[in-house]
Length: 265
Image (cartoon, rainbow, N blue to C red; front, side, top):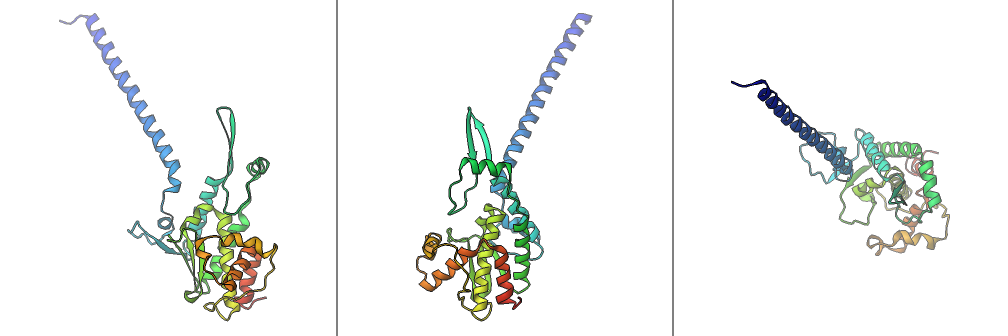
């Protein structure tokens, strides 16, 4: 025979066990979700850009080269914008110290704290660069220019115009730099395409367009300071300098393409 006090003690013991198990289960779920969120936030650098751009549902998960087409331009822009968000300048306070972080592009002067503060308060509007990228890619594709994004062995090479193959090759690592840098790279390569067109046709050897240099020629040699350019002939160096000097003039690059390649004024 079990008395009431024994039953009460047993009920109390059972309730206590259930309560402890409930707390442990709740804690486990919270920890699991926390780890999941953190790992997801770090995954942006680890995903395969080329696989993301692929729209053919291929089972191959080790894509090393992908051609841009009408169907994946929007996906390309989404990836570039994703990295823009990751690269955006930030101000953080750690142990009472103010720390500023921002994405520094190659050959870009170091920014002052005032400049970083201004970027945080007034983020760059990338709409015109997005519009340029879309318009430029469609113009190139409609003229049978191949645009290939791939993992290049030459790590210092961002992009290349191969006139014999009518192909623009872009290093996939450049996607991490975001929309503006990609727009300047695309503008640079379009200038090279226009140089070929002035030379006779899309697959002709490029010649100078005669574009103005905003700075002395010696200023632009810093852009040629890597192994890929070390054996260039002087005439080829001038082709690169013309492209580097004018790559930020994205509207001019498109106009030049229309003028020299499509004979449109």
